Image (cartoon, rainbow, N blue to C red):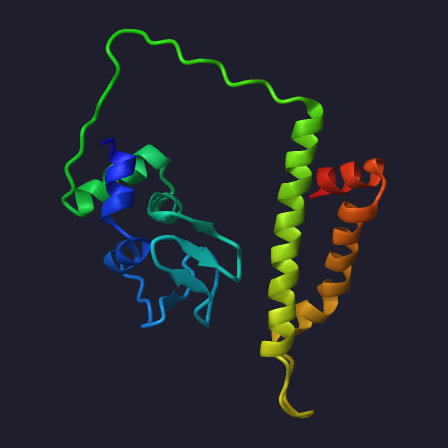
Length: 179
Protein backbone atom coordinates (compact mmCIF):
# COMPACT_ATOMS: atom_id res chain seq x y z
CA UNK A 1 0.00 0.00 0.00
CA UNK A 2 1.15 3.52 -0.68
CA UNK A 3 1.60 6.19 1.97
CA UNK A 4 -1.83 7.74 1.35
CA UNK A 5 -3.74 4.48 1.86
CA UNK A 6 -1.72 3.45 4.91
CA UNK A 7 -2.09 6.82 6.66
CA UNK A 8 -5.83 7.07 5.95
CA UNK A 9 -6.39 3.55 7.32
CA UNK A 10 -4.17 4.03 10.37
CA UNK A 11 -4.86 7.56 11.62
CA UNK A 12 -8.11 9.45 12.12
CA UNK A 13 -8.29 13.20 11.79
CA UNK A 14 -9.17 13.39 15.47
CA UNK A 15 -6.02 11.46 16.45
CA UNK A 16 -3.87 13.73 14.27
CA UNK A 17 -5.49 16.89 15.63
CA UNK A 18 -4.92 15.81 19.23
CA UNK A 19 -1.34 14.79 18.38
CA UNK A 20 -0.77 18.31 17.03
CA UNK A 21 -2.21 19.97 20.14
CA UNK A 22 -5.85 20.57 19.20
CA UNK A 23 -8.20 19.45 21.97
CA UNK A 24 -11.48 17.83 20.95
CA UNK A 25 -14.36 17.34 23.34
CA UNK A 26 -16.07 14.02 23.94
CA UNK A 27 -18.45 14.79 21.08
CA UNK A 28 -15.53 15.35 18.69
CA UNK A 29 -16.01 19.12 18.43
CA UNK A 30 -12.97 21.42 18.53
CA UNK A 31 -12.07 25.03 17.81
CA UNK A 32 -11.05 25.31 14.17
CA UNK A 33 -7.35 26.11 13.65
CA UNK A 34 -8.05 27.54 10.17
CA UNK A 35 -9.96 30.63 11.31
CA UNK A 36 -10.46 32.68 14.49
CA UNK A 37 -12.82 30.51 16.49
CA UNK A 38 -14.00 31.09 20.06
CA UNK A 39 -16.49 28.24 20.22
CA UNK A 40 -15.96 24.73 18.83
CA UNK A 41 -17.23 24.59 15.25
CA UNK A 42 -15.11 21.78 13.80
CA UNK A 43 -16.21 18.14 13.95
CA UNK A 44 -13.33 15.67 14.15
CA UNK A 45 -13.65 11.95 13.45
CA UNK A 46 -12.21 9.99 10.48
CA UNK A 47 -12.65 13.20 8.47
CA UNK A 48 -13.05 16.79 9.61
CA UNK A 49 -15.56 19.51 8.80
CA UNK A 50 -15.74 23.07 10.11
CA UNK A 51 -19.24 24.50 10.17
CA UNK A 52 -17.79 28.01 10.51
CA UNK A 53 -15.37 28.29 7.60
CA UNK A 54 -16.32 25.20 5.59
CA UNK A 55 -12.91 23.50 5.83
CA UNK A 56 -13.39 19.81 5.08
CA UNK A 57 -11.33 16.74 4.26
CA UNK A 58 -9.50 13.68 5.46
CA UNK A 59 -6.51 13.35 7.78
CA UNK A 60 -4.03 14.17 5.00
CA UNK A 61 -5.97 17.29 3.97
CA UNK A 62 -6.02 18.35 7.63
CA UNK A 63 -2.25 18.02 8.10
CA UNK A 64 -1.59 19.70 4.74
CA UNK A 65 -3.78 22.68 5.64
CA UNK A 66 -2.46 22.89 9.20
CA UNK A 67 1.20 23.04 8.15
CA UNK A 68 0.95 24.43 4.62
CA UNK A 69 2.26 21.24 3.01
CA UNK A 70 1.42 19.42 -0.19
CA UNK A 71 -0.60 16.23 0.15
CA UNK A 72 2.41 13.93 -0.37
CA UNK A 73 4.50 15.84 2.19
CA UNK A 74 1.60 15.81 4.67
CA UNK A 75 1.09 12.06 4.24
CA UNK A 76 4.81 11.38 4.76
CA UNK A 77 4.86 13.69 7.81
CA UNK A 78 1.88 11.88 9.34
CA UNK A 79 3.53 8.51 8.69
CA UNK A 80 6.69 9.71 10.45
CA UNK A 81 4.81 11.29 13.37
CA UNK A 82 2.78 8.12 14.00
CA UNK A 83 5.57 5.62 13.21
CA UNK A 84 3.78 4.12 10.22
CA UNK A 85 5.76 2.18 7.63
CA UNK A 86 4.68 2.11 4.01
CA UNK A 87 5.86 1.08 0.56
CA UNK A 88 7.17 3.91 -1.56
CA UNK A 89 6.42 2.13 -4.81
CA UNK A 90 7.45 3.57 -8.16
CA UNK A 91 6.63 1.96 -11.48
CA UNK A 92 9.58 0.50 -13.40
CA UNK A 93 10.62 2.51 -16.43
CA UNK A 94 8.34 4.95 -18.14
CA UNK A 95 4.71 4.06 -17.98
CA UNK A 96 2.35 6.19 -19.99
CA UNK A 97 -0.66 7.26 -18.06
CA UNK A 98 -3.82 7.39 -20.08
CA UNK A 99 -4.89 10.96 -20.66
CA UNK A 100 -8.06 11.83 -18.83
CA UNK A 101 -10.99 12.49 -21.11
CA UNK A 102 -11.41 16.18 -21.83
CA UNK A 103 -14.73 17.35 -20.46
CA UNK A 104 -17.04 19.27 -22.72
CA UNK A 105 -17.86 22.90 -21.88
CA UNK A 106 -21.39 21.77 -20.96
CA UNK A 107 -20.02 19.19 -18.50
CA UNK A 108 -17.63 21.74 -17.01
CA UNK A 109 -20.48 24.24 -16.63
CA UNK A 110 -22.72 21.63 -14.98
CA UNK A 111 -19.96 20.64 -12.54
CA UNK A 112 -19.31 24.28 -11.66
CA UNK A 113 -23.04 24.89 -11.20
CA UNK A 114 -23.37 21.83 -8.94
CA UNK A 115 -20.34 22.85 -6.89
CA UNK A 116 -21.69 26.40 -6.50
CA UNK A 117 -25.14 25.09 -5.54
CA UNK A 118 -23.66 22.70 -2.95
CA UNK A 119 -21.61 25.48 -1.35
CA UNK A 120 -24.54 27.90 -1.24
CA UNK A 121 -26.93 25.25 0.12
CA UNK A 122 -24.47 24.37 2.89
CA UNK A 123 -24.04 28.04 3.73
CA UNK A 124 -27.82 28.58 3.81
CA UNK A 125 -28.17 25.62 6.18
CA UNK A 126 -25.48 27.15 8.40
CA UNK A 127 -27.13 30.59 8.34
CA UNK A 128 -30.48 29.09 9.36
CA UNK A 129 -28.81 27.26 12.24
CA UNK A 130 -27.04 30.46 13.36
CA UNK A 131 -30.29 32.42 13.18
CA UNK A 132 -31.80 30.03 15.70
CA UNK A 133 -28.75 29.19 17.80
CA UNK A 134 -27.44 32.74 18.25
CA UNK A 135 -30.75 34.60 18.54
CA UNK A 136 -30.86 36.88 21.58
CA UNK A 137 -32.87 35.53 24.49
CA UNK A 138 -33.97 38.94 25.73
CA UNK A 139 -34.41 42.44 24.22
CA UNK A 140 -31.45 43.72 26.25
CA UNK A 141 -29.03 41.06 25.04
CA UNK A 142 -26.52 42.17 22.39
CA UNK A 143 -26.69 40.56 18.96
CA UNK A 144 -24.12 37.85 18.32
CA UNK A 145 -22.12 38.50 15.08
CA UNK A 146 -23.25 35.15 13.62
CA UNK A 147 -26.90 36.05 14.26
CA UNK A 148 -26.36 39.37 12.47
CA UNK A 149 -24.64 37.62 9.55
CA UNK A 150 -27.54 35.18 9.28
CA UNK A 151 -30.06 38.02 9.18
CA UNK A 152 -28.07 39.97 6.61
CA UNK A 153 -27.16 37.18 4.21
CA UNK A 154 -29.92 34.56 4.30
CA UNK A 155 -32.22 36.26 1.76
CA UNK A 156 -29.33 36.91 -0.64
CA UNK A 157 -28.16 33.29 -0.49
CA UNK A 158 -31.74 32.11 -1.12
CA UNK A 159 -31.87 34.43 -4.16
CA UNK A 160 -28.59 33.01 -5.51
CA UNK A 161 -29.91 29.46 -5.11
CA UNK A 162 -33.08 30.47 -6.99
CA UNK A 163 -30.93 31.82 -9.83
CA UNK A 164 -29.04 28.51 -10.03
CA UNK A 165 -32.28 26.54 -10.04
CA UNK A 166 -34.59 28.68 -12.18
CA UNK A 167 -32.48 31.40 -13.83
CA UNK A 168 -31.46 31.79 -17.45
CA UNK A 169 -28.19 30.23 -18.57
CA UNK A 170 -26.53 33.66 -18.79
CA UNK A 171 -27.55 34.48 -15.21
CA UNK A 172 -26.19 31.16 -13.97
CA UNK A 173 -22.91 31.66 -15.84
CA UNK A 174 -22.51 35.17 -14.39
CA UNK A 175 -23.20 33.91 -10.88
CA UNK A 176 -20.69 31.06 -11.23
CA UNK A 177 -18.07 33.45 -12.64
CA UNK A 178 -18.59 35.89 -9.74
CA UNK A 179 -18.32 33.22 -7.05
